[in-house]
Length: 382
Image (cartoon, rainbow, N blue to C red):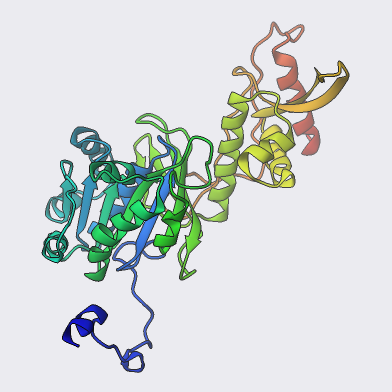
């Protein structure tokens, strides 16, 4: 009887639990993370998963939380460089908080936990942790000789290494990659998501030390349903905002950035092709391209293609304006982190590019035509 009771665990009277207060969020991670939550962040390599995780770690630390970062993916020097860049955009006192409450472990080695005592010993190392980050799943499973293609192996990893931390109140995020042919699911076993309460897909626009871009998290699975549907962080170029829910203006700017990036790689793409690639409605892409066209950033031109039967078809494709005519797109203000300046209601008119004063050269004609159209809209003369 006593052995059976040990297997069952203690009885809980659900009617005695206080449900009058909402369940708390992890400090600094409202709508992102809760104590005792199992979470997967997945995305392609280079999307910004580790950088976004580090930003979230600092948000938790800033609000007094304690974070463990188990790094099997990046290396200490690279992470130190990222941390310094983020801290440069934070108050000076954040450095002391990070020293005190960021437990970064770049040389962790996962050993099989063969006894209950080993499981307890593993979990005790994380006492007091508000957030534990495992970066990444593939390397952790590889150390244990487990196969990420098998749901049974990932379940064993979750039960042995994640569940004991969750039972002690820590939220656990596991970083994972996408497969080569499937961008909408994490790589490997399809059952991974069944073992998590919350799943976010991570994607990012081009960013670097000199250039600001955006990391976006889109919610793919939620057991509770009150977590953020989308999160963004603006990174690079000296800007490192918190992860936050974007305002509508930020969503618009992100879509336009994605359109420009697509056209840079696929000049002449049609509205439907861009919409399919970005997984947006064609009507939305058409509207955003019209805005970009009005300010001279893109232009739509007809072209001819020949199908397999030799039949010629005319199509209208979108192209980036030439460097001599391009006007910087004024991104909308966010009202949150001051990253984007406010946008005026008038289109930005690109300046003429040169010419002799007697006859416009070939490069000047499109810019002059846009100026004529814009002046006409607002009742002006040339």
